[in-house]
Structure formats: C-alpha cells, structure tokens
Image: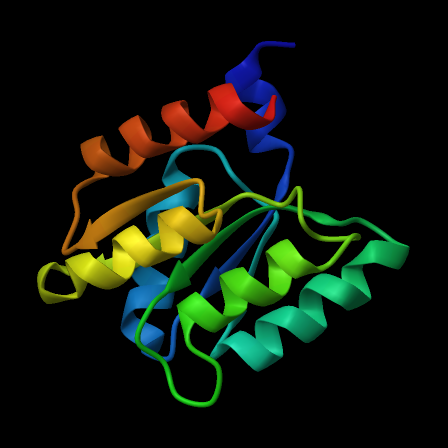
Length: 136
C-alpha cells in the first residue's frame, strides 16, 4: 500500500465552528478518496471525540480552525500535545490570513502544518502530501 493509500485509510477529524467550512473541507477530502471523516464544532468537542476514539479507531489526522469559541485551535493543539495518548496525532491548522502569528504559535506547539482560508484543492493536496510524509 502506498503512503497516499495509507493516509486515506486514516480517520480524520475536522474542527471548525463554521459549518460551511467543515462541509467544504469534508467535500474536498471525500473527492480525494477519504471516507472516514468526522466533524466537531470546537476544541472541547474535538478533544472529547479524540479521547473517545482511543478505545476503537483513533483519529490519524486533525484539521482545526484557530479562531473558535470555548476552546480555540491553539488550546486544542496544546491539549493534544500534552496528552500521552494523543500527542502523536498530527494537527493541521486552518486559518485566515490575518491569523498568521497564531499559526506560527501553533506550529511551535507541535502542529504538523497549516492551510490558509480560502484554499484550493491543490493546496489541500500539497499539505496532505507534506503531512503524509510525517505520519506514514
């Protein structure tokens, strides 16, 4: 199985408080051959889902928005990287252009990569290739 095929078998979690962005990213991923996609509205819900999945099929990749209520993407990365169970789970930050300093913070905390909104399918494919080299 190729690295790309291995990556497509992984369970993915999309975290964003805006349903339109969750749906758009999910659609892009489905067109690329991913089928195990779940969604969360904020970092708290995402962290619970990540922890709950440990007993069955853990998530292999997380896409997280930065700016969300309750628990933002930076806090989610901190919580994931502080957890012995979850710390190996790669997180790709999804942000708007004006949050670039926050993206750097997320990368320094352990995020695997980032995507700037709005993004194209080509950008998503490139980021998946980069992350795929790190996790498969």
